[in-house]
Amino acid sequence: MLYCKHFGLRSAPFKFTPEISEIFLSKPHREGLAALQWGLLEEPSGFTMLVGEPGTGKTTLIRRVLAEYYQRIRCVSVLNPKLSPDEILRSIVDQLNIFPKSHGKLDLLYGFETYLHGLRPRQGIAIIIDEAQDLSDDALEELRLLSNLGSSEEKQLRFLLVGHQELLTRMASPGLRHLNERIGARAILNPLQPGEARQYIDYLIAVSGGSTNSIFESNAVDHLIQHSGGTPRRINVLCHNALLNAYSQGSKQVTLDIARKTVTEGENILTTATPFDSSKTANQSLAQRTRHLVLPVAAITALAALAFIMLDLQPEPLVAGTLADNADEASYLRAADPVAPQQISLPSDAVLADFSRPVGIYPGQTVYLPNPNEVTQTERLP
Image 1 (cartoon, helix red, strand yellow):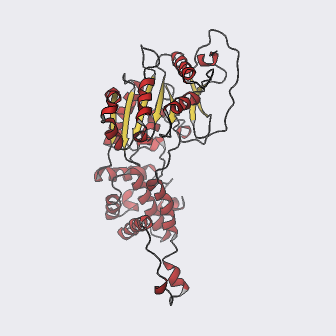
Image 2 (cartoon, helix red, strand yellow):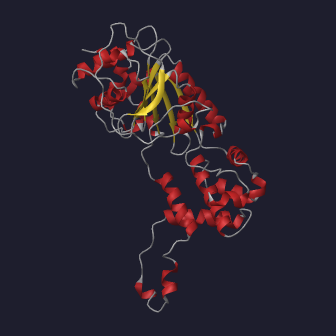
Image 3 (spheres, one colour):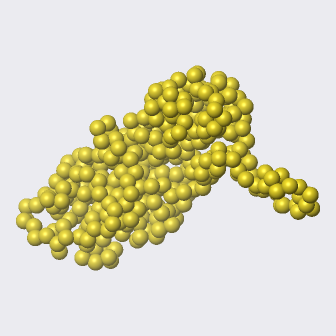
């Protein structure tokens, strides 16, 4: 970032996708992380629910868990909640690189269950359903039925339902009572309190080699926090744009005036423009008539940044990696070109190997496969 050297920072402190090694764990995030760890590793019911509004850190916590336990958890992501029950099953089977005899439901179920029985002890599949509040009742019931597959001695298949507050209302409906009773671990990510938000900003700036007091006036920080609603993503956007505004003005510190300007620019961008009245501009100069039509550089930057908040964009696929040494590998990856399955003649005693590195299978999907030199029992399906 251009402003890093200006403020004496090693790196940009406010990122839209934080590095796993730089995650700040507030009290609600620590509780959420503990619930995810239990739910994806130990929860006997097989269902965990993570609820929070956009920007509260749901995806960040999931990435943290998958990065830490990538050798035990193989991740499958269902990112489109509008899929039918059969399409969800086929998406799961495809991402696990299972090759059934046909795409009929019975063959898909047989291949999936055979795959689960081929897992080693303490290895499991985590199926992450994003935007779960938008799933149909039939799709949610299909997930409940799928949870019955696998070994009866050890839970191998775990579902993580991720969604907004509406998910809690959906689960409380009479038609979903059986599924709701199976959800063992639940976590709700609430917005940060003002004190937690201040600690969050202090932490991110310190990680980047700076000090909040030297870069922000205290009342400027308070103003940004007040208009962030306590949402980490919005805090990042406002602080990032405030630094850009200060840098563009040549200021070594974000003042209260700069903070107010940053908030106002963001609010103006999100406000519908009033109709253009030509009668009021007939006698104005070209500069006057275009003054309110051309956004400053900082406002354009804010527009791009705030798009991440206001647009309900589909999240990128979740990828696991090591927590420290391979933190970069645990970030989002671009999908690779499709890989054609290879037909292999296998010995009858072939067994599942340890989980290997993540690879792309289909555009927009990333899964974990065994070492390519080894094979799974599912590849021996007739």
